[in-house]
Amino acid sequence: LIPNSSIEIGNGRLNTNLNVNIPSFAQINSTRIDGLISLQGLKGKAKQLAQPFEANSQLRFRQEKIGVEDTQASIGDLVAKVSGNVNWEKGYNLDFAVLPFNLNSLVAILPERLPVETDGLLQANLKLVGAIKQPLLTGVINSFKPIRIEKTQFKRISTNFYADLNNFVINSLQLLPAAGGQITGDGKIKTQLGESLQQNRPIDFNNMPLAFNFRAKLP
Picture (cartoon, one colour):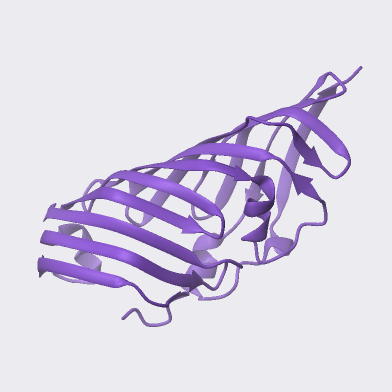
């Protein structure tokens, strides 16, 4: 249905009862929709990711507002419960509670393999806000069991970040090595995801300019 889309839909069940009024793409903020969409067992794959996705959701449309109800989405072994709403005029207001996951599960969805070995459990809470064409994702990620990166053990890792279609910014990062002390940091990765999506090209994780600052206090 969407020309040059980077998302391929496999199968799933769609039940819908909608009344739609979209003036034009240029006036997408004036879209008015009433009704209900129910998605069950929707499966597919995004070209930029190595693992397939699956989703179940109920979307309730009331004029310019879409309520997200009973929604769960997964990519590989990553599972998130989604709630909130999308307003065509005001933008996104969505919360994502990512269930506890192994660090390897996050690495597995990336199209390029990381040059380090990882292991350990994390949990994350994310929020998507911003205008329809300018989304902003903020989030907090915490470990709740020891983490291993290569041969180094960490008893705790925590970070908070934000991301738009151009940059991924880590406001703060804290790592507590099992041997004692702490490592803190911040930084930015220039992702240019918007450009990749517009041009329908794979995301090149090996060609993203980055700048990080780290500070260590070790025994």
